[in-house]
Length: 356
Image (cartoon, rainbow, N blue to C red; front, side):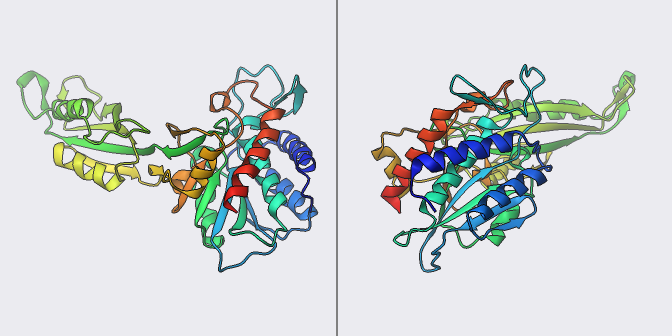
């Protein structure tokens, strides 16, 4: 294994080109998982594939040491319809590498893999290093990092590769989707019969619209609740609806657990409340964590991220950080600068040199 960063940077870019040229929509990542297995295997490194997820650990893994996970995803969304270039043709122009998944999150993935290779044979590390390329991140699927975690050794902390311009996303909003049902009593509209479930729902909707959570995060701001769907089962205009259903999109900062938010909602509304999922929780990593302190010493800034990543599914602290720009994600003619990849590998290494 080489300790020459120039070589691992070159290999990272060539691997990214191969990944771009291979469609890997969420739940359809079989071929890119195979590419990653072949690449890692070509280095003589033992690795494991579970589903469409691939992981490996450093050569001198020691169970007595804490373990650091380097994770990013190799699935992509489908191409934006406004693409003018072939999304599966890795085109290099003026220092930019174009192609679907180049920025989100191929550049992060190959950069973290390059860093893993750089440290793979070291015998003097304070942490074990585990690399995992996972699937289904774009759809928050259960076949990705969540499926992989039970197969990994005990993990103490992680770096999650997402395009952050190599700044540190230390907190991330959680997503809680709630189905609410308001009950009334059916009746004929002309005879002023029944109890209108819509009117009852409106009172609860007004509460969702107006309520202000008392704890306001310096990193992520206030919790936000938005009613996004409302419907009744009525087809006739002259029937007072007995049932009204509505959906609430709740974005939760790191100061609240989902249980706290749900308990507060149930105390204040009359509708029945059913959370669809509590998987995508809000997360944060302490500012005095060694990874964050190392980043600060390198002049990195920290912020709270409004977007959700696989960080939300990890039961340990994680720092979201990677080359590329989140603003380019899912856009037509997606690209990443080669210098962002090279700089990302170098900066990851400088950061980990302080920790490992």
